[in-house]
Length: 226
Figure 1 (tube, rainbow, N blue to C red):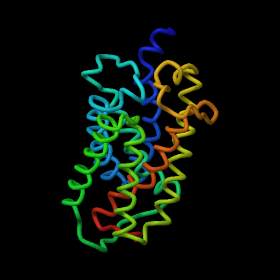
Figure 2 (cartoon, helix red, strand yellow; figure 1 turned 30 degrees about the vertical axis):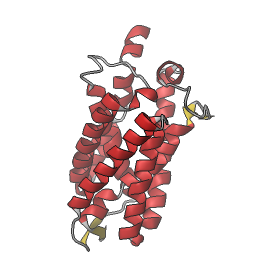
Figure 3 (cartoon, rainbow, N blue to C red; figure 1 turned 90 degrees about the vertical axis):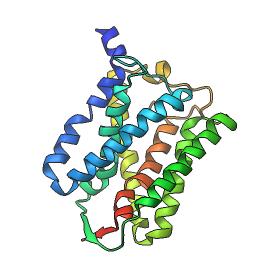
């Protein structure tokens, strides 16, 4: 049993999020499209990051093989998708009214900038990839603030909400597998600061993800609160 839990640690950790994902999907029809679209984007991004960058941050076990990272994709689908809607779900906010034109071209530009940042951090500066991801999300946050100052307060509360959500999820994971951080996280290049067992970097990433990633869909599509 212990060996199965260890081998399936990553898969089981992601699976914990499934009930909440299903709940939001069926109770907030206005969030369905965003939940799926952003989840798929995060899923693809997680696979790419896992293959090329994040081995310096953590090395979780995969049920099939690291070159077939089903867990990375599911992590993007469930965790990534949930982090983009959890603020709106908790506070019952709806962004439905069109106010500005879409800026999909800028999405591609920001994506290219983030790839450059990750290459710079990991391959040139030899700085842990998690900090590169944080910087990427901060750059996205700055762009949103520049384009949509009306979203600033929502971004802040979204960052806090996603941080709390991530902390609760991580606590559940650590109850299932208390040695997960010691076994799967690469702590040599991290700060080794923990909050009830959760690495500081996990919460920092969660905050910047909620800050810059959660409302980018609304910003890029030109939505405001209806």
